[in-house]
Length: 314
Image 1 (cartoon, rainbow, N blue to C red):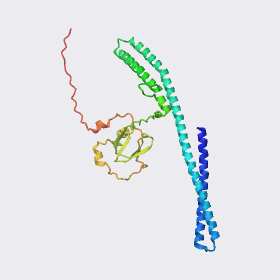
Image 2: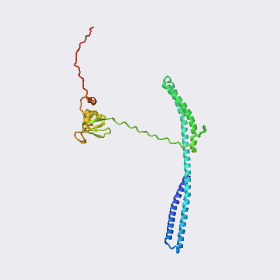
Image 3: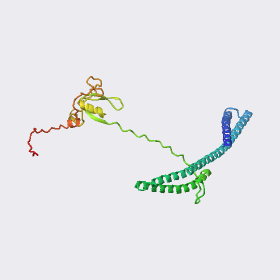
Image 4: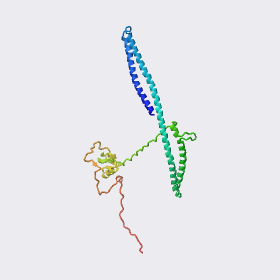
């Protein structure tokens, strides 16, 4: 292969030199023809016969030089094509040989590992056999024994065929790859793990009765406008509901007040509440906003009464 590569490099160098000389010879030929044409147009045709003959000789000489380089270039290009084909065939032979040797090595590894696999399966089945009174253990024993038998038989056929021995007049893959009958086995595709998107942190939509600032799950400061809906972390939304800064979106106030403030908002106004730093009143009973918004009416309680019960004495 190294000899072919050196020969191809030499031919390409020769082709480049011939191409350069052919271009120069073609330019010289064109210049000589132009001079001869000017002579035909401007000179005295009867008095300047020697000059004409000299110009014609120059044109002919340039044409011979140009055509010589062109013919040589065609022949060198043919040799380059032939060398490239030989080199490609040589490289394919080397690749096929390496692929067949790798396949044979992989088969050696399978043959070495197969007895260990079968022995390990038998040991595991023997251990499970002692638990014959347990249904699942018995099922595992039968599965292992059946699988081991099938793997042993299938591996026997597969290894013989892949080794290159003639089985039912089928040429083995190792030999077929080496001789170019079968293509080189494709490389195992690289599998990339697909990142699983993490679920979004829980949020809640509420209706703001007052303007407020709060931090989202990423720590960025957000501005919730008065009389507009706002989506925020659940804990922050619950705090706003408890403080009366907001109400649920099912509250009748939302239908009446939504959008009435217009676009007059200033996130830095002194009346804007910071839901992340405000302290809730302590020692106060906790009211769930959902039952509170339902407007339940407590039932009247009966007055306490005292009754007498006769109990027999012993």
